[in-house]
Image (cartoon, helix red, strand yellow):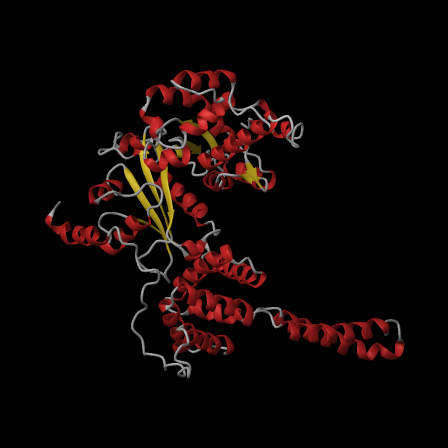
Length: 518
């Protein structure tokens, strides 16, 4: 490590494993006046924050000091206090429905009178006035249907540090919705998400290639937020930012020095089949010979931006940049995890075992009905291979043995078990990726992300990630999604409109004919 990098290295080393503060402190400003003292000494700190909220939400143009008071106060609250503030924001500053009802009654009265006078020659002179009144009432209705927290959120977005606060506020709101799925909370989340989509439009974001020469504070965040393949140490970090690799981040001017999302790229001759190939100590391919840009990690740094597809725009801009800077690169693909596969498979095995037990009991009331839901998880030859690989099966069925084997990751260390599980796990993984859906879209979240961006399923790779996390999530299997530049828009449109999943011909051997898309 060279001397000029020592201070940075020490800074990253000291803080790399520490996540950044949920909300960075804003630049020093004039302190806002304190809120009125609460006469009840037992009152929670949330009471002060609620007073700041009331002052900000009630003002047509909230003063910066009031917004700072709310921001600082919310930042200091624990989880319970934040939930109290969010409930108040969602319910106390919702749409003023009493006013909406009054305006609707007035509107219907004027509209009815105008309709009744239709064709009355003596009332012609009053039609223009009635029309003007209706337009005024419609404007009033539009204003009334706007929730009272709208102005507060927009003012907070314009405040220094406000966008980051709103991202954290929405992260807290999503957590609260997991506990209390109340309509006012859903409405607040929907409105805030809609506004964040506007405020975080691609035109407002800057693409930046992250290198070892960037400030240590930025490199710390890359280490802390890497969510797919953890960065083990400084050497690993420097390797991922060095020759044969790239790292790009999307930045917003309101959150300086912190990427909203970043993507890591490896330059190869061909698509890598394992993460071990990607994270070599030395790049296996000189950059001048690279023909494939492999995206192997995409990490969001802001939980509050969940559901806002910044990755789609980041991918497209990175592809455009690489095509411009490296004309030899013609293949754009991913090496992606399959985080939901083993959870799905374990649930499928458990349900089939339960149905088999029900069928075996003649007096069971589900007899006959349960067979409707029975399916052959394992092919006969796969079941035989699993039985042969187990020294003592104790009369268990193949799916029971498979369930037992998958309870731990120890099977990976056995060549016999690994060989027996390869065929069924790859076949079932292909089914999971290409067939299993929720609301007409791919059940796997990573698959859904890439498919809606215009990718296709290219190849399934056996034991591509042998880390503990990789074995537990997907049995060590990873998948290559391929972005064919000439088909991206077509594939994205067909997937979003009909749920059509495109896959390569190599997957046809694992799928029934009706499942193959090419």
